[in-house]
Image 1 (cartoon, rainbow, N blue to C red):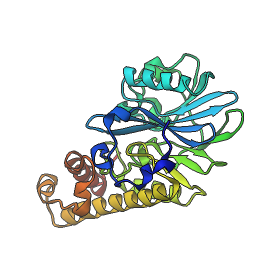
Image 2: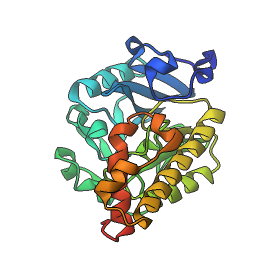
Image 3: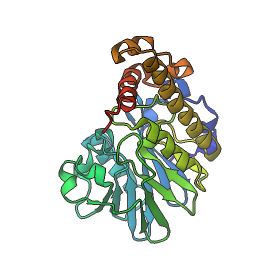
Image 4: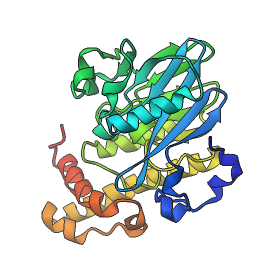
Length: 287
């Protein structure tokens, strides 16, 4: 069990474990966020964290977002057993991407899947047993606390879900928040993403948990979410500048200047994808 009060939040603000000074041998790791509430950090390639949320109630366990392989998911299930004997009863699909869902097949049978309608069809075997949300908010009583599953708007995907613990003032944002990771826009809605982050920042929340990157202390988590919002705005603005110059997307790829964000994790991979996605949005091709 890791406690951020030990000083981890004073380390370099980066998604890169090596630069942060965290050995890969420390993963996977559980981080206590509040009584009966835990963050779970596991390493995925090319070497940054995939984060899940674990809420232990009197009636069972709620998990938000899984891991990217059967082995990684099974490891997480085994870790959960070290903190509670209670069964997993609810599973929130914050992101439908494979790095969060590819291990779903080892989840116990009979659990309740909470998923946005947009994401339901993208799940494989789980899609048949998942019931899509019918509103933008669903409240789950896990026994000793209430958990709100929220749709704040399109962001990294068309069906991003967030999990709010109102009493603890915690918001797990899945891939709508990437802590010091360059905005990944393969399936994104760039301008909507900014609006979604704005809604999160306006909530009565003290601690924001990212779907990738390190779990931070409450104060730093807000600062880093604001920094991520700045990255989204800067990327969109730079691509619009290139589009206004009359450049093709291919030529824009060569001229994009990300400024300080070029140092963020996987910028070299995600920069070209962002250019094409923002071009799609500008030209009305985004569906």
